[in-house]
Image 1 (cartoon, one colour):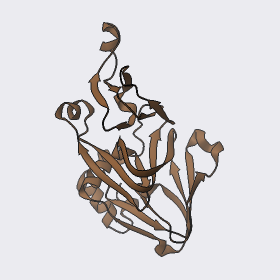
Image 2 (cartoon, one colour):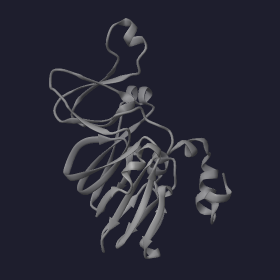
Image 3 (cartoon, one colour):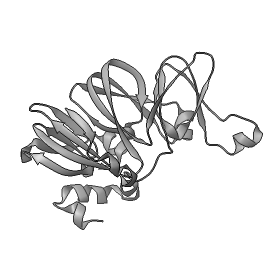
Image 4 (cartoon, rainbow, N blue to C red):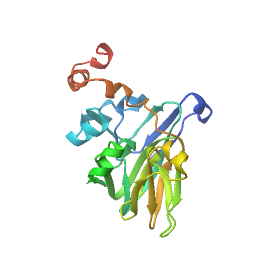
Length: 234
C-alpha cells in the first residue's frame, strides 16, 4: 500500500492524500465521508456500521473497508495532517481514538478507561492501545512530533495537543510556572518515564467533527440509512 500527498502545493487550502492499494491489500477508513475520488471495482468498497464504542467516540455510524486493487483520494481540511505509523507487536502508546483515520488488517484495539479525575479534566473517559502487525493513520491538527520522556525531569504538554502517551509513564494533570502563568493556561500533562509522547503542533480543530457534534443521534442515523440522506438531510 502506498500513501502520499496528491498535490503538496495545496497544503494552504487543505491536503489531499492519495491511497494506492495492490490486489489483496485492504484498509479500513474511519472517515469515509472524506473520500473525494475512487478508481477501482465498485464492490471494492464495503461500508459497515461501527461498533457502539466507535459510534460514540467518532460521533458517526459508518466506516469503509476498501480492498485493492484500487486508488482513492481523501481530502483533509486546512491545518490537518495524516501520519502513517507502523505497529509491530505490543505498542505501549495510548492513543486518542478520534485521531485514528485508518488501519490495516492485523491491528488490534484495546480500550483503556481513564481515572475519574482525568475524565473530568479532559472530558474524555478512555484511551486506545494498539497492537498486532500493520499500519495505522493518525490524523493530527498540525504536524506530529515525537518527544522523548525522562525518568526524572517532567515534560509538560498541553493536554489538548497530546495524541499518544506511554501507558506506563507517570502522568499528572497540572499547571506550571508562577501564579500568573498557572492562572491563564490550560491543564497540562506532567510526564515522566521511558518512551516518547506524540504531540500535534497546533491546538485541535473542530472541522471534521463539527457537524456530528451538533446533530442528534436520530438525524445521524437517518442520514446514514436513507439513500442519499447525506444530501437531503442537513
